[in-house]
Amino acid sequence: MNTLKQAKVGETVKVVKLHGEGAVKRRIMDMGLTKGVEVYIRKVAPLGDPIEITVRGYELSIRKADADMIEIEA
Image 1 (cartoon, one colour):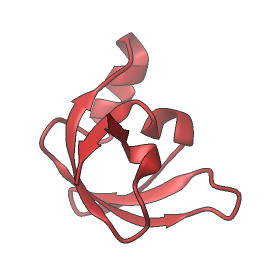
Image 2 (spheres, helix red, strand yellow):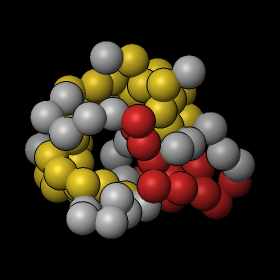
Image 3 (spheres, helix red, strand yellow):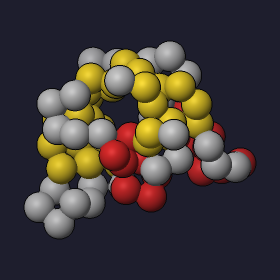
Image 4 (tube, one colour):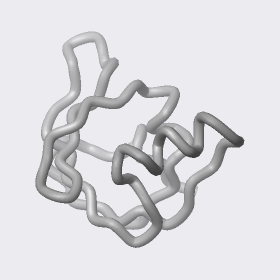
């Protein structure tokens, strides 16, 4: 299983499934990260957290812990 946390800078990936429960999963979905959406990995902070992505035409920074809950395919 590949997660958004493992994606490399410059890749465009598709969200396959969201893991997590309740409020955490809801917050990820509210940010626009839903099944089937394409995500472009823009950059990763110097210490590795957070990850900056482009999703649905806007830029978003997410923590590694949240990125690890998002299953992707290349």
